[in-house]
Image 1: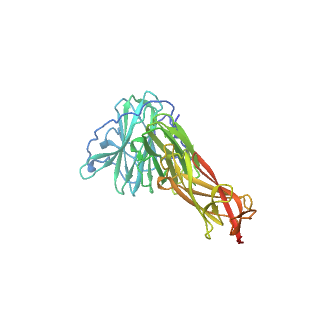
Image 2: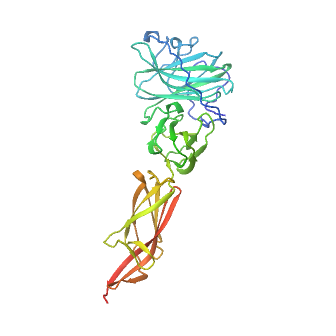
Image 3: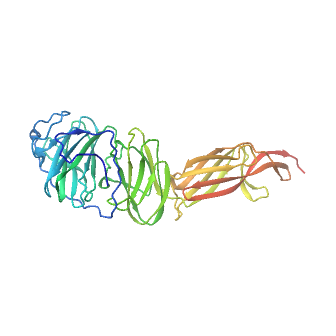
Length: 426
């Protein structure tokens, strides 16, 4: 059961401030009902002079009569909630808000929880020059599911919100409408539901924010062929941030990834939806980074360079290998199961030097376009416990190795850790 606000069975007589301590379980209900199709409703015109009487920006007003059309819309202060009922199928409840500063307006509708009743949510912008209402966003989830829509807003604008009884109605149990403002939405807003979802390529790493406790960031991913995908969400925010993956946004998530973790899932061809949200609190000033892309299934070593002119690819009797001294620049490539380069993949490189006081040196990096990466590692001085006579000088070195890991892929290669040489021709 989806929860947002605790309301009594009685209809509220006036707008109520949002309860700051309340938390909402933003979990999709189980089931496999398809997303409802677009439902076109023509909004009537309204003169600015005909705005409902008693309107004072920031002042609020109580309902003076039925709010069944824009001309009788109930005014709401931003960041308040309102409860009301709809008596019959096709009935509408109209509301409007005044926006004093640039930002974003989010409308959230907690429906009546009856599987035979389907309420939808519409968000319009009012044009005072000609009285038209221009649709900005809508939310068409199925019965008993909450609705949510948002729009970027300009200071001085009016926005109208309509609750429509698309299927059935409940004259006894009220719905609850909350309208919020956010001062600092990110560049992808509005994207609060699947109909507002931003299209993704099959490889993306984006840094965004959740701007209020109700905010949801939706993206839609088109998968052209079955592949394994990596999902990760990294943030310093203290709330319970999650990535949820859907094949059907009106059903339960197919998979969930918690913050600061990575998970790999095989996705069949088709359309997939991805939602970022918090199950409790948000920190609007703290960003998150979402990574989605083909998972690396192989990682290869291209080269290892080092300092002091001591590099090279040679053989000290244990096979061909790269030689390193006090540093190592490790370069390679991450590819998926089809051999395509994987960008944005976190890469971990560990150089193992067991003969020294520091047995391993680890660094992290990220693959660039086409899957290529290059990371720099500082190394301890070699002990020089092994030697190799090349006929001109004696080379002292240790056996070492480099390990690389990205997504599902890992590999290891031999290294010669050079200590010093003594010139002794013979």
